[in-house]
Each structure stands twice: as C-alpha cells, then as structure tokens.
Image 1 (tube, rainbow, N blue to C red):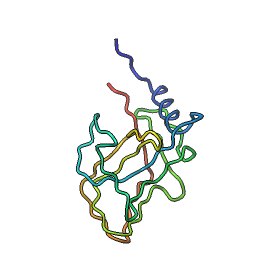
Image 2: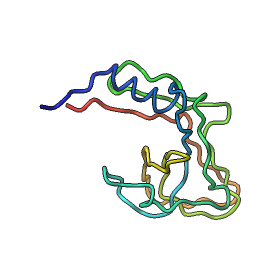
Image 3: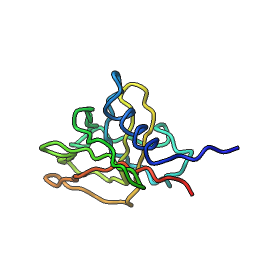
Image 4: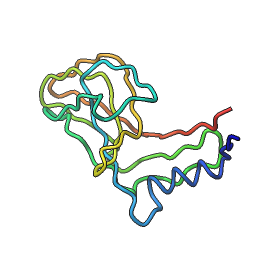
Length: 137
C-alpha cells in the first residue's frame, strides 16, 4: 500500500520544516565548487562548499520564509530586503548552490547550474528563492 500526498500535506510539511515549527532548524545557503549531478542520493558531504572570497554560507532564518502555497507544486519563498546575494571579493569557480540545515548539515536541496567563473566585484543573487515540492504522480 502506498500513501499519496495531498496538497495540504505538502504545504504543512514545507511550513513545519521552514517556518512554523516551534524549533525549526535555520537553513543556510552555500555555494559549491565541484561538478556533481544532483540526485536523490546527493548529500551535504558530496558537495565541496566554498568558504572564501564572498562565497561564505548565509543563514536563512525562519522569519523570512513565506507560508507555502496551496497548489501543485507547493512553493515556499524565501525573501528579505537583501535577498540571498553572494558578493565576490576574489576569483571563484562555482558550479551551484545548496540549502542545508545549520545544525544537522542535512541537505535540503541543491542546483548545479554548470561552471561559472566569478571575479572580484561580481555577485550572484538568488532572489526570489523558491523551494518547490511536486506531488508525485
């Protein structure tokens, strides 16, 4: 027997994980420098986090997550006045970004957008940043 997720269930899971639980773990956005295909088995340890020249991780607090939408896919948007922006102070080769739990280190999601070289004075912005959960068919 297989349970089927419904929109309200997906919406509640996003909200509980990101914003409404009494003690949801803050998340952090980070950049990674290795070329890796993101798949179900990808873990935080699989990604080489960048920690220099403006590529340092950024904490995403629960207050800045919007409530998840009541739709398929269900979307929770992270936004604040500055967005998620990485302002580079040196040369970096970046393949993508990820979102992980600050305390647990659990990988929530990641995107490999292909090799991009950033120079001093350039920036990468992830605004608005959406986490989407599709209901499986």
